[in-house]
Image (cartoon, rainbow, N blue to C red; front, side, top):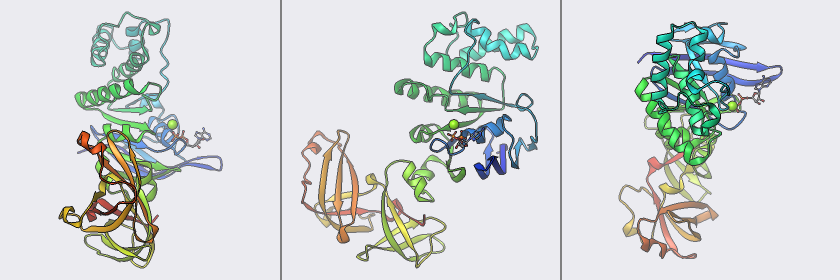
Length: 367
Ligand SMILES: Nc1ncnc2c1ncn2[C@@H]1O[C@H](COP(=O)(O)OP(=O)(O)O)[C@@H](O)[C@H]1O
Ligand SMILES: [Mg+2]
């Protein structure tokens, strides 16, 4: 796999404010890579530096191995799609898409052919003669995409391109974008603050907070093996419980921790976890199961504890429970309602139960 975009120790300062702090990433050719994080964490600034609209204060960016230095945007083989598409209202859709190629003095027949193909790609082959005002929000966003892909950039930068669309359309467009990226074999660098969008679309995700790139990994790695509390918290729902680290196996990274001075938990651990320190036990609600008797606990579940039900809320697809373990430790649990009979669940408030999970499903985090 060749590397499409490399950021090496990239910093961006605006006066006293540091928007991007020492970011290093290698994004592969043909990869769908998302930068995910809350508003203001530095995603757009990172993208703008790759595009050339901003220059790094420090560090270097490489496109296909070549340092881009101070190259202006139009000399970089990247194209950007922004959240707010600026289409020319007085031009037809085809003319809007052709605009960039005309500026570059591409020959007329070639322009026509490329515009036709680009519009077909985004499923707007029959809308070439329409004006922007005649299109829906989703169709306009697809014109913005066609306008970017018609330039055949090796790397497409997308800054919350679906942010202005309503939920149903956004889901449809997520699918379309993913299809387009696969078909064209393009490298996509996609900025979003929507964790579900990032999980669904990406080959890999880089999670940012406060200018820092906290973790890079596949959606499953980010979800199942977060390296810090921020990442675990930002993506999905997580129970965090204070604990004290008793031991960590150097090879397997499996740790034993003591919770509330009461019971021992066995779990995978982040790289920075060390014995003798306070830490957090992080466990997702859907990874915990509830049983009336120890006999029905699955064999793979090596963490089994007594608990009692303190809350029980039916939410259609799932039932959400809160259970209390020794030392007043409370955990949220989600159980899928596989059958309509589950609506009359056996776990009323006050029921003594066993809760269990396997040690690979929990995670010990330092910070
Ligand atoms: N040109 C600028 N001048 C000063 N501060 C800026 C400028 N651009 C961005 N910032 C600040 O940098 C931080 C990161 O911004 P941005 O990269 O747009 O975040 P995101 O896209 O993750 O929401 C924000 O606090 C923003 O206010
Ligand atoms: Mg932004």
